[in-house]
Amino acid sequence: MVRRTSLLVTLTLATVVALGIGGAWKSFIYWGSSILSAAPTQSDFYEYLHVRGDGEVLISRYDANYDPDTAVTKSLDGEVVDTTGRLQVTLQGIQLMPAADVNPPPDPVWENRLLPYGVTKEPQLWYFVHNGQLNGSGYFIGYDSRQNIPLAYIGREGFRKEKPPLEEHFQIDFRTILPGSYLEQGSMTIDSWDRTSEPSSGRSYDSFYVATEGDVLKINTSDRTLRELATEVDAFAVGQVQTPLEELPLADEGAIYYNPQFQLLARTPDHLLLFDPGDSTMVRFQVPEVLKNRSAIYYMIDDETLLGHDTSQEGAIARNLLVWFDSDKVLREQEVILSVDFDPPNPQAEAVKAAIGYPAPIVQLIDTGLVWPWRYLRNEQVASFTEGVRKAYRDNWSWITVGITFSLGAILAGWVVYLQRRSDRSHTLCWVAFVFFAGAPGFLAYLFHRQWPVSLPCPECGCRTPLDRASCFRCSAEFPRPLANGSEVFA
Image (tube, rainbow, N blue to C red):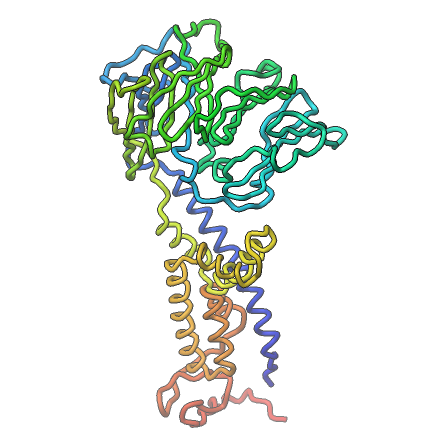
């Protein structure tokens, strides 16, 4: 007698097996993808453009092993540069956003609205609190990290013991708080030069700069002062550029520490404003027309010259636009094409990777229809769950991923129909739905979670029929009894 297991138990067992297969499959796919992404590319070298501490632009070529001992450094003219005897320090530039409205509005969650913007002597910690609106505002608050109590607030009128009223908040566009990349600077920056300790004992910054309502301010949390560096200049982004060295430090006696100096650079729609932190003098530079709408990196070459550097990548080729300019004109412009060893992110490839890593339509439906809407609702990005569902399908629904997973589910579901009919199994509709939504893991679980009887062709109609019955399920012809060999026992 064959023992029949209930459909619910069988589906539960198949679900558990499918989850195990899906987890193992996902881990294998992403592990293999990480291995492939780390593998060397076809090119046997890559090139890197950088600005040396004295302001000279150089190109370093590395082999596939990234061995600095075999690197060759050349000037823009192609001449090999001797890097021995001097410390080859890199001049630090700053990437400034090209406009206040260039970035999409970030999500107004607390992680984006409460931002650390300065550390004085421990245990003082300073944060900027923004209201999360595009043309919004905010204020600074300082905390004692040991006692967990607020120390002071900073508003437009300076330091105070209570939270500043709304009219004293710093008027700052939310899009300039969180620039487009982690390197890009927006409306605030820490003063890298004004610090309270040597780098060997850890950096602790006293001051930071703010661009608000077109003004440029310097806030010092040590002496609790707020100073206007420039007013009504339409500045919306600030950052710091390193002052170039007159001579590179000697490289004898091992590593040598040198103390770089910085100047403040502010961005307006048409100009760059260079401030000397010592005497607050300001030099105005006209932004070259070719860089006005680009998120370029700017370097200080000398007291009267800036360098703008913008990069765009096409496959394994990087196009570097270099523009030298002074206060009123472009001095020189040059494009440098380099070979790089990595490719930019490919949305189509990422969609295919997601489909292969999660080959189950139910994962796409749950992720887009439940997980993301709940996350949006929890972070107060939407007013209702229904609005969250619409936002999730608009932002996270990839038709490439959906097309692959649902097509695969339909093909495997059709295979289940064939297997069910060939084996004369019951509950075909339930198993078809299970495999369609569970995808490839569900199909493997359907095949391997239970035993399949041996099947042979029916001697009458030729249809393959499981041998767990006495007759053919198609023509009902009885299977011939096995020949007696004298060892049978009859009760």
